[in-house]
Amino acid sequence: MRGFLFSLIAGVALVFSAAARADPPPGYAFLDHDAGLRQAKAENKPVLLYFGRYGCAWCDQVNRTTFADAEIRRIFSEHYALIYVDAEGGRRIRLPGGERVSEAELGVRLGAYATPLFVFMSPEGKVIARIPGYKTVRDFQDYDRYVRGGHHRTQSLLEFLGGRP
Amino acid sequence: MRHALLAGLLACASPIVTAATLDVMAGDAAVFIHLEASGRASLAVSDDRVGLVWEDNRSGAPRCHLGVKPRAEPSFRVFPFGRGECFEPALSPLPDGRFLLIWEDEAGVGVGIAGADGVLASAALAPAGGQGAVAHHPSLGAMAVWTAPEGRWRRLWSAPLRIDGGTLSPGPARPVDAAAPRDDQAFPALAATADGLALVWEDRRLGHTVIFASHSRDGQAWAPPRRVSANPSGQAAPGLGRGTGAMRPALAAFGARLAAVWLDKRDFLSGYDVYAAFSDDGGASYGKDGKAQDSFGDAIAQWHAAVAGNRRGDLVVAFDDERDGSADVWLTRRTAAGWGGDFSPADASGPGRQGDPAIAVDDTGFLHLAWVERDAAGATRLRYMVLPPP
Image (tube, rainbow over all chains, first blue to last red; front, side):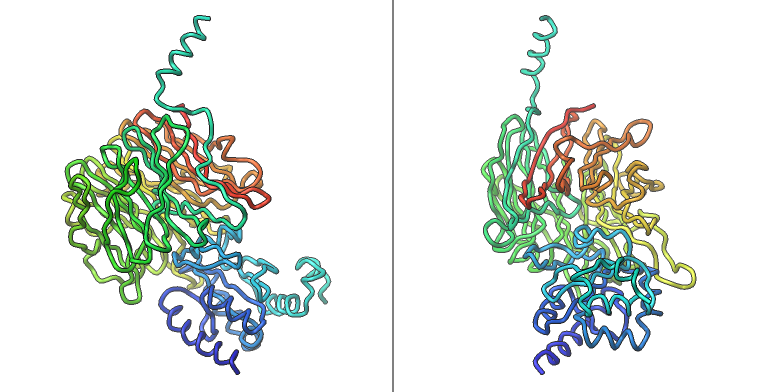
């Protein structure tokens, strides 16, 4: 119940702030970086961090198609802490190691060269996979199986995807 | 023998000690050093003195620090400043061996004057905000520009700074753009020119991030903003997005000209590139922009673009990228034939991460470079070196 309330309050907060500042997909309770990591830890959920640029065409495309899918919305809303980071933003965030950096500086640390960049992380903020560019519903279903199925403990994402049916 | 004697005499006459790279400070894996001034204005030279500002957390929380040294001395004296947690300090030279500082701390936006013994005077500019830039013009005086939250957006503000001996008094704050903000204005960079003051910043009024500019001939009013970067605006087919990105501008006067430099993502598949545009009228207009980096960096992302110039017309751009497998500091000089090709000083390249450059070019053409190094074991150093003119 506590976790649900946390998500509800934080999600409502983000809907207002994100609408004004950046481009997360509608209908998702994306949080800012620090709140999302707190939620992940509190609810022991993996993280989907969406690193998107303001005005980015491929972010728009993935929002209108992949993230408009009802099953994708259900999977990520129920099972993940959702974080949206503005790739050119100047707001300060706190990395899991304690460092305070701007949102844009996170792109340097992630080796981001294109947006959107999707980063799956453990509830403690450890990076599991970094996936740049437009991705389909099927792609995200595979990533979800890789992350929540625990396959990342024994296989790289490429190895896992190479063995999919 | 004759040559050795001549070389010895020249060495004695040189005002610069260039032999060794200095470690301004060092820390372990839990220490984070940030050179992240708006406009990357973290390093300046005033008369015979070098000033460097940064933020680090060695005390357990982010704090601002000033390092000051005479050019020929082998170490910096370091002074903490700001109230409580402090971020994004920037500085600019004053004409008398002192420096003008601006920073964000728990009290809001602060400005100060600093000399050989640290911060001499300070004043509050705004109760909230940050991303400050400062500059001093010989006849118009000193100016500060910063961003502050206004409703949904961040807006650029400016204020003249009156310096009377050892005192500092901010004048009235005014918005740079008189029109009500329609989106964020952020990360200003400021420079003094023969014609007045020039300003660039990143602006989102077009629905994506674009570099805008203004200028002031009297140190009071700012000209209407105009666009500098040509990163494309508008939707990509089929009706997607609003345009590519351009961010983190830096600005420097060199000779009678002005150079604006920024990170530009018009080639959106290979990360940001370093772009530049020049003004020959004190920032009233800029020519067509173009890449400042060379083509060897085209396929990867560049970060942390800085620019510095001097009165005799030298101009240098610095940035970092991983073209050689790990982050290195890269430099390029502007020549009569265009950009001279990227080069990386030995101490600012190689294993580990060498990045976040800040630069200044003194009036004799010596390039002062500071950067942050993090080695494979996690240890970090704030480093400084001087490169002679080519």
